[in-house]
Length: 114
Length: 111
Image (cartoon, rainbow over all chains, first blue to last red; front, side):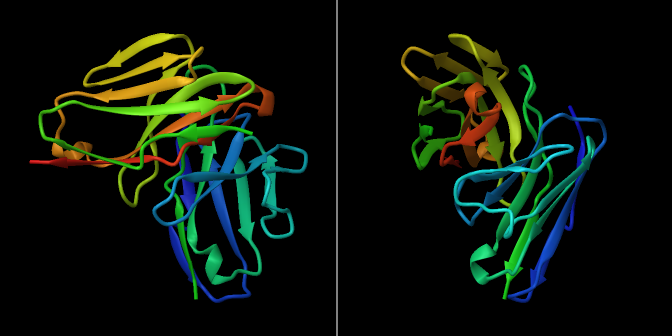
């Protein structure tokens, strides 16, 4: 399965600022996803990162707040913009989608907004 | 949309067996996954079912009934290290093969 390097692993940010999270995969993958996991809760899909086109966002998530880049098949970024304390969460990237291969997750970015 | 339901929490004794149920509703079912997540860590893949029946992997087994929209994860010979959250996730072909997760079941193994 693919190996994902996600960074930063954690950050503490001031409200009103933005943070960009990066995911680098060791092989070309068709599908990349970004999830949010709020404390004590399960994973919620933010968007599907599409290579060469705009990301596909889930209900409740918008591009202005969570812009995503996918310049090639091994790399993607998620930016959390104009942060507020409610954005404090763990953000995870994931790759996969085909057959019976489990979707692989990055190690996550623990974001605290103060 | 999809509804994926699983119990919030379960407690079991070391050496025992625990069964975690998951029910789902989806329009384009294309597989069900179980993940294990220890506190502060990323989820790790445990099992995958796309056809009806039981898939066994060592101490862990997963069962699927597509007609009932039902799956379970069976953990045998529980060990203390099995204390974790277990996430049921459904892949929807009608939605670009994205994974949607249930709320997760926190399993606590006691000595």
